Amino acid sequence: MSRLWLVCYDVRCDRRRRKLAKLIEQRCERVQYSVFECPCDEEMLERLLKRWLRVLELPEDSLRVYPLDERAKRETRVFGSPPPYEPPDFLIL
Image 1 (cartoon, one colour):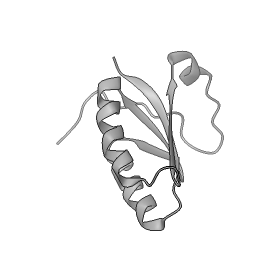
Image 2: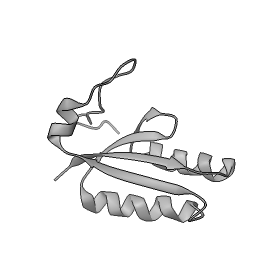
Image 3: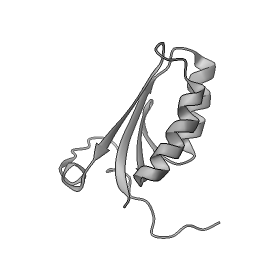
C-alpha cells in the first residue's frame, strides 16, 4: 500500500549532496531545498534507502524519512508553494 513519505537530508559535502539530490529526485518531488515528498510503498522505500544511503558518510551526514498518513496529508498547511505531492494515476513513458 502506497503512502506519502517526507524525506529530508543534511549533507556536508557538496558532491555527495548533489548526488543524493539527483537520486532522490528520480522518485520524489522536491518541496524545499533538502526536503522531498515521496509517494511509495514500504518495499519501494527500502530499495530507495539502500541506494540513497550508499552516497552518505554517516554520521557526518544525515537522512530522515517520516511517514505521513492520510490525516497528516489532509491537515498539512502549505504557504507559498503547491500542496503536498499527489502522484499521477498514470505514467507516460
